[in-house]
Amino acid sequence: MANNKEMRVVKGLDVERYMGRWYEIASFPSFFQPRDGANTRATYTLKEDKATVHVLNETWSGGKRDSIEGIAYKADPKSDEAKLKVKFYVPPFLPIIPVVGNYWVLYVDPDYQVALVGEPTRKSLWILARKTHIDDEIYNLVVEKAKEEGYDVTKLHKTPQSDPPPEGEGPNDNKGIWWIKSLFGK
Image 1: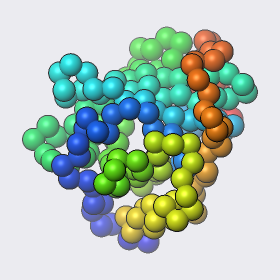
Image 2: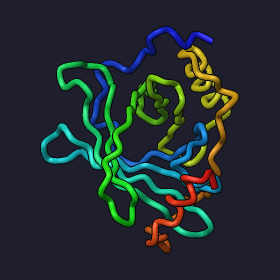
Image 3: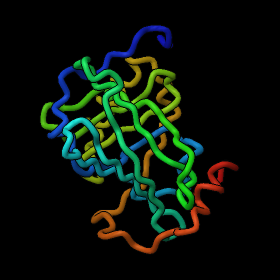
């Protein structure tokens, strides 16, 4: 695997076109998402300063909505590369500890309907789309792009999505139990 080469990221990302709701089609499982998460999605909203993005990540686990909010911003404001930083405060029930991660847009189709997002250690990967499902041909094309960037795509897990997706917020897990469980890999 070509893990030593520098990843290619999107240059000249049209941030305003990238805003809105994205559904998680597939991802690498991670400790910060519930294992039984379904209908996972992210909603991005550009703030008035045009430099900061409000991030709302949601998933449904055990019939309840789990969510976390944060911000995203360019890692290097002078660069035209789509290398962002995302910052969330944890735990969700008492958000006091900032956690910052990388969010690199590796691919976005010309119509801004499908995106591939990763980060430099290649431990996280997401395939996102504007709809809850994409054609196998498109999925395979995006997976191939991930392979070209040195990702072990055998780790990809398809995210269950309802059609139509859940509307509104649904019942919340207000206690943040999902976050505590995630520390133990549940």
